Each structure stands twice: as structure tokens, then as C-alpha cells.
Length: 158
Image 1 (cartoon, helix red, strand yellow):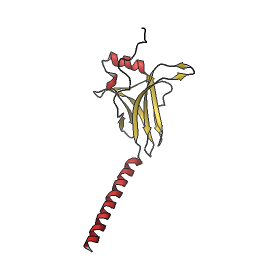
Image 2 (cartoon, rainbow, N blue to C red; image 1 turned 90 degrees about the vertical axis):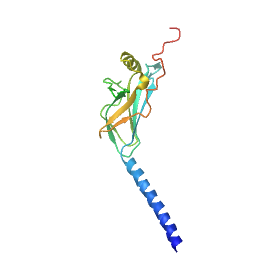
Image 3 (cartoon, rainbow, N blue to C red; image 1 turned 120 degrees about the horizontal axis):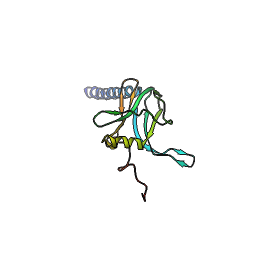
């Protein structure tokens, strides 16, 4: 009888711990879960390829909506670069991210590279970020803007 009670007690404890863990996971996922990335792209206008652009994207994989109040790039020392004139294809700020939605903001990569060069900053040390309406700041998990070394590249033959 004592062995049966011990086995049932162990089963109950494991079940209780599992239920508690599931509740913690559910609680964490019940709010907004925002992921930030930076990437490179080229706008296409019919048959014409535009200048290279940097794209900062925020994706909400959580269950609750959240508002993006600002975005930008952060230097290694904590200072921030706020892009005052994003391209017209960018989402407006503030931007409401519903559950499962994303927003993106675009700016010219050449202007960014020139600004970094003028201030002695390596663009590989930048980190994209967004500020949320709930007061949190979310940084991209990967540093840099995914731009190869030596940008702006010179055309072959120049």
C-alpha cells in the first residue's frame, strides 16, 4: 500500500509540475511577443531595380496587439540613430501590430553607410530596435544590418 501511495504521489507531483510549467508558458505567450530583424532589399519599379534599402521589421507572434511608437538603429555605445525620413513604403509611426502581424520601415542604405562613415561607426555594429507602447524596447537578436563589407561597392570596371 505504501508503494502504491508513493507511486501515485510521484505521478501527482510530476503532473502538477507539468501543469504549472504549461501555465507559465501560456501566460508568457498571452501578451505581445515581438521579434525585430534588419535586412537588405531592392525595390522594384516595373522593370527597374531601385537603390539598395535597409529594412527594419517587427513581427508580433504573441496573442495580444501592441503599438510600435518608434524605431531606429542603436550603436554599440548605446546611442541611437533615429531615421527621420523613412521611405514612403514604410509603415506609419505609431503602428499597431495585431497578433500575428508585422510592420516594416525602410531607408536608403547608401545614406546609412555614409552617415556611419562620417561618424567613424562600423555599420556591422548597429542593432535595429523598436520601442513599444508598453514602454519596452526590443532589440534585434542579430547585430548589424546584413550588409557585406566594403559597401558601397564599386561597379566592376570603375
